[in-house]
Image 1 (cartoon, rainbow, N blue to C red):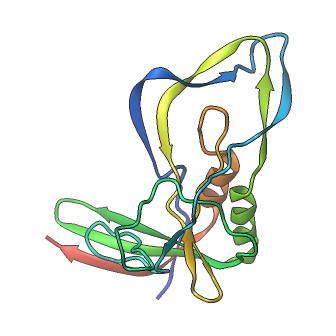
Image 2 (cartoon, rainbow, N blue to C red):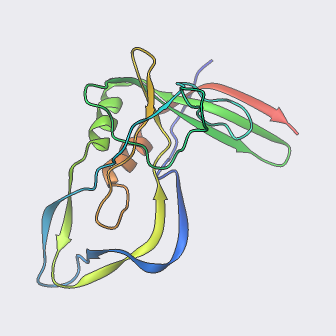
Length: 191
């Protein structure tokens, strides 16, 4: 049985690290500035390859495709050129003091997948450019933990492009949040 569940995702998590000055961005309400298209900081490094399914165990997550060290989720590499996903997968855990449910949700809609890939490949965003700098809040945003899976079963957790303040570009947040995720597997453990 498949359940249709629209889930608000946003960023996978936000961790406060205190202080200021992660970077400088310009405030749109200061006079004398203008909106301009500026380059994003694209993810670097190798893609994070994972098994295309959630573990559905305590701490439900993705496992490494190579079976080696645990998957380092946080900032993966870019989507490789020519990689075309046929589904997106994410893992979730919900519960209370009496039970915990681990779920696997998927998106298979070609339009939603195309929007996700385009979002992860965002090279420019519109930002306000002016004379008056505003210091960026010192918070760290974790990339959404979404695995993109191609027709051969190869799965990657891509890294998101970031703006001048090191925040995930809005297109990635929107594409992962606004897609209609279908719960395809779930396991409930009663404690």
